[in-house]
Image (cartoon, rainbow, N blue to C red):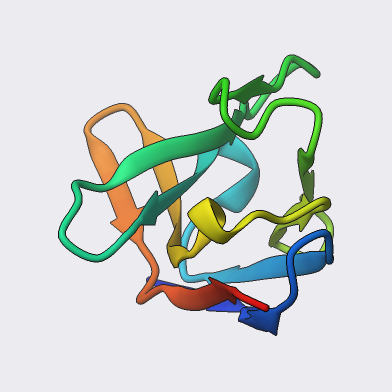
Length: 115
C-alpha cells in the first residue's frame, strides 16, 4: 500500500498550487479520501474530504471557497486545488484513505506560503 503526495512548494500569498496523491496497492475507488494538514507545533487537521460514492465534498471553514478536492478513480489519484493561498495555509499536507477499519496515510508534502 502506498500513498504519495506531490505538488507542494513555495508560493506567494494569493497564489495557487495543485496537490496530487498517487495511490497503489489497494482498491482505491472503495475508499473515502481526505486531505489533512499539520502546521508546525499544531495538531493535524482535516482540510477536505470526498466520499467513495456520491459527489458531496466537505471542507473546513478556513479553506471553503478556496480549495477544491477531486479524485480520478481510473488513475488512482486524489487532488487538492488550492487557490488564493494565505500564509496560514503553510503546513505539511497529507492524503488519507479510509475504508471501514482500514486507513492509510501518505508521507506528506510541504506547502509554504510567504512573500
